[in-house]
Image (tube, rainbow, N blue to C red; front, side):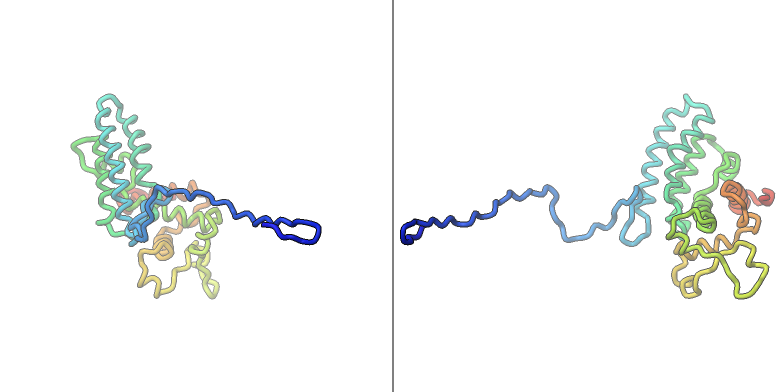
Length: 245
């Protein structure tokens, strides 16, 4: 294109069009429907937060390891087998098990059956309860309570993440009472206690306040774990154990 003017010819160049880039073809088909479960940090969360998918996945993985341990059991000593079970099976039962707090015993029963099978890998033809006491292993329900109360202790002492400090608040009475120095936690509102009994903010203060004073007022985390484990053993396995000091 050009235009004639007196004494000169002026050309008009059209503006260049922007380059077109080829669109990348996605290999993942897009779907508008939501998935019923997702994995986060190794925990399978379902849309109802029942954690049934996670319990099934943990049980399946533990059965696989128990099957392999059973094949090499004739070549191992009892102590070596115990270490192998603790590393491969019990560690998976304990991973994020505080999320299972508040679930009924029927929901956590598959995990307890896995622990029973792990015990039978060490000693056959014996009852589970005395073997758990001999091995110093807490049952699954007590292990869930143990992990939850350890988190509560760390929140009380200030070593837990900030979001846990908002859940676990020390009990401060309106007037000077003896219970102010007993290390109790403030219970949640009554409406929350009656409608959401499975919440961590409801269960943890209730379990914490049910502990003996000697356990709640432990000076260090090591002392707290030792006293708490003795208390849970006496509560769930052997009532004849002495009171933790």
